[in-house]
Image (cartoon, rainbow, N blue to C red):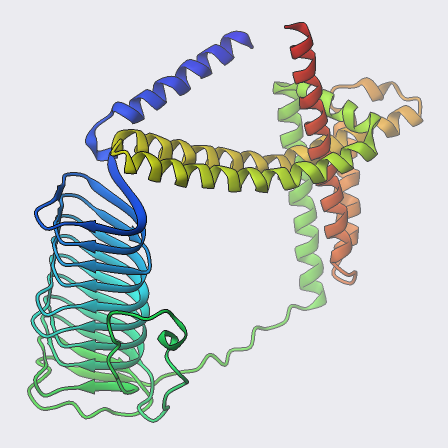
Length: 446
């Protein structure tokens, strides 16, 4: 075991060093504060991550730009992709890649040039005349005013769509009805003041005579819309809007019982196989947890609740430390170290979540089953109490039978949930106390 731990320690250290000093593809710059400005003439030769209330780019970012804040303004150049979530996003400059935006007001100015796609979601999207999108526009939200040019296709889902620009491909629009009226005040009324005003787009589909669609126009609406002659080169198709009136068919008693029986068999086989594997690979670990649970059932239940709460607290701590560390090293312009901190935080989160799921879903139930089976054989003065596998098999089967009976279709389901929760807490508590005792013994020995 010592050699194994040494090998794992060396492997983790080597991984961290590789992440820290590997190719620039894993490096990035990070900045934060109330207001972050990349001045005109300033060049960031890296991916840039920003968390700020207000962000303004007047310079150049040679890489991807990821921004989270209240107001994001792009006046300069992003030589890569722009990914942002903010109340107001205004793009007046150049983005050579694609844009992924989410916010209340999404604005593309008359001097804006986007080389790739725009994929967005929010209350309002406006593309001014003179703006260009090199590929597709995909947007879902309250209203859309498109007066700029889109080289390829447009696909939107919105309450009101006003098309005034030029589209080089097809237009597929799912829009509200023109006579539905406004559903209420816009969300911006209840938000902080925005530097960009949302346009007033009426419900339904509106196609201006100055617009052009090189492909087909397909829209979903309950009534036909008047399309000016010569605007659409291809075919115009209206699809009737349909409401989901399908009522899910309720399962019969026979179907519920059949599903219940199959679930019982599947759960039993799965837990027994996992239990046999654990006892074969880690007999000392599994038996140690079982003995701990059998000797101290009530403390195990209490410490299980503590372990459950500690897991979620640990997740919060890891997320907080990762964010603070990433921003701190980013401010210090230690981009490579920032990347290492972020990747280490992500890996730690992934490992902790996977371990928790495995323990609560399988290990806790196998340990409880082993303790239960061993207690039953001891009460019966059976020599099988010391058998390697039979106590676990019998205990797991009894556990599954009890929880299955409590989850029978004609019995309230919360009873099975309570029993399952108690079993999970007992297993977690046994693991907590066993681990603590092992650490204390090592501390005394050392």
